[in-house]
Image 1 (spheres, rainbow, N blue to C red):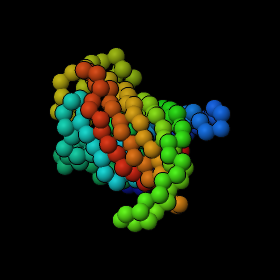
Image 2: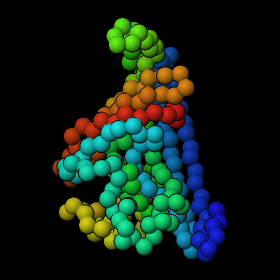
Image 3: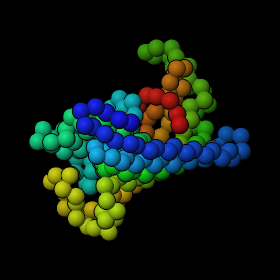
Amino acid sequence: GYGSNEIKFQTVKTDLRKYWRLGRDYTIAFRSYFGKSFGQNKQKFFLGGIPYLLTGGGETNGIQDDNIFRDVILDTSNGSLIHDIYFTEYAWPLRGARFAERFGNTTSLFNIEVRFPFINYLALGFPLKMIFGNIRGHAFVDIGAAWDSKDEFSSKEWPGRYGNNVSGDYSPWVSTAGLGTKINLGYFLLKIEMAWDRNESGYSKPQWYFSLGPDW
């Protein structure tokens, strides 16, 4: 797209999905997303987080998160703050990672889910009489990266755009895994998911997320 006031960029995005049905009730779902921005004022892709998030969070690299965003995003000393907020593309879901855990003018994201029946029928009597059916479960793996330069894949130094970060080797890649369930509420799905992010010492503590929205 093109903007006014000398804000010029072009962005290419692809979103490919494939589904394999295993018997009557089991499905493997695969999604591949790629985005790249060109031009004088390239868009940034914010990689991480979950769309339509209600609540949730956890830790990153073994440290409890202060909020669901990487702090540097809302740094008022950032000269491109307004541009970043209004001309940003989000690459998600990357469950178990904060919003904008990685960002750059190029991104790639892969999602794999194994979907299976969890609860066929659930009737509640208190505090409200409600009936839920066909509650599905899923196990997932999310892997993504965002970068400005290919050199980031061979460097161990954190790029300056991330500000002050925890010690350790940098990688544009973020990988997470987890389990979840999806409850059909008629017009949308309630998703309850537990995720672990991969870090230097193994995996984080379980991180819980509650979100609404369509499936992919």
